[in-house]
Amino acid sequence: MSADDIEHTLFVCRQVSLYRVPPKATAGGHKSGEWKVADKIFTGRLKVIAKGEAAEVRLEDADSGDLFAVCPVPIGQRDIAVEPASDSSRNFVLRVVDPASKRHAFLGLGFQERHEAFDFNVALSDHEKQVQRAKDVSSAANSAASGSAIAPSIAQSDAATLYKKQDLSLKEGQTIKINMKRPGSAEGAGLFANLGSKGSGGPAVLKPLAPPPSYTPPQGQQPQQVSGGQQWQGSNSNGLLGNDFSDTSASSRSQSKDKQGSATPSSWATF
Image (cartoon, rainbow, N blue to C red; front, side, top):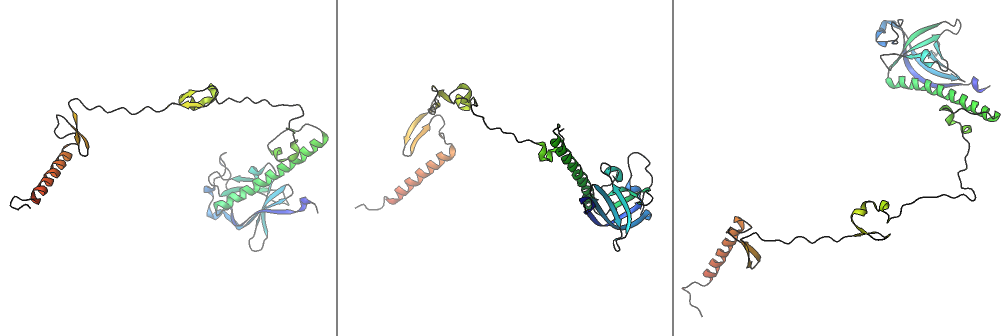
């Protein structure tokens, strides 16, 4: 038994529906919105079977497994055999063929879930890509054996025979010249070139920061020495700190005088 005689099941859906579809009125494709419930002719199981390079969509009875219809999918003609509906991603139009008479008819295929329709379409697409890739690899191997030139393509990129191992190591006597910028050069200084002066070939020397400016009192104000520091007084009797500070200072001084006066009343005898 050869590999072409082995059947591979690529996809299975437990329940799908088939409909009679009206002829296409325009070139825009079939519209599943025109399919009526009364036009449903079958409900059963769908299988995608691959046998060598050939693939086909089989519609079977879910209970007995009897075959209802077959849709062959030739390589390169997937869009003709399985045409997506123009108004829904869950519906397709199958070109079913009678194996005995070779007559064909178009039937509407409907999936219940969107992900089932997506997996069905991906299974057919992956099989077609795999067959095309196998052909490209075989053609590349035959061309390499005969010594003819190989035309590059996207599918041939997966074949190891399309690539020859290249030795990129240095041979004896070969050298490599690399141009590198010195750190002290004008081009290599970069951001630090504007921060200070540079020595000859050395790193940039940063300049020290300038001291903060000294404070000059406004005209007409003179410093007055107090116990807590200096207080500026001038034309404004409240000082630099405002009325709140002046009132607080005056209140504290009056309270301290009252305490001193109350400590030694004039009526008491002093010993």
